[in-house]
Image 1 (cartoon, rainbow, N blue to C red):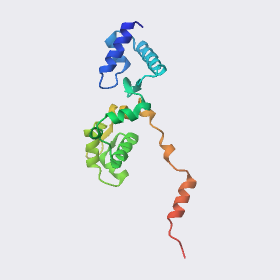
Image 2: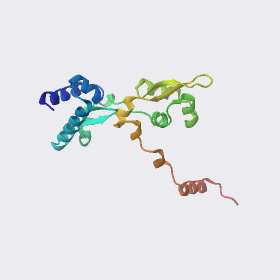
Image 3: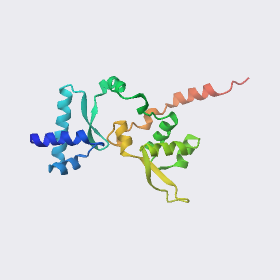
Length: 188
């Protein structure tokens, strides 16, 4: 790959606000997407070997620059306190349900959580983590929600396939039995 193409890849990724897919980069630079992918992997490895303060990462189906994770403390100090709005526990729980059950309606999420989720769902839509992905064909044609590419980007994953399996979080039968024993009222 020529130096000009390599430099152009760096320049485009430097100004990109979202991860850029290799296919788009290939079209822009008139190079095949496989060649672009190979060059991006080489650049990523080169930056890591040089110990740079940034990395080239593959997230949400594309490539982008990001600060190196081991420098997070410095980046956190730089970012002003009020600029990083964190998600509440309710929002994180709702987001996890949408991520694993999508497409899912508000009513389905509410049934799983056991509380009204309208406000939390509005917040997640407003922040761009979830979006309407269709309508339920059943009665009422409820709006169905799913995650967005921004969700994958913020989690640092390439696709939903990279989410950990739910089985990793389900306790074994022995743990469930012990919990049930502990919750039973003592009999006299």
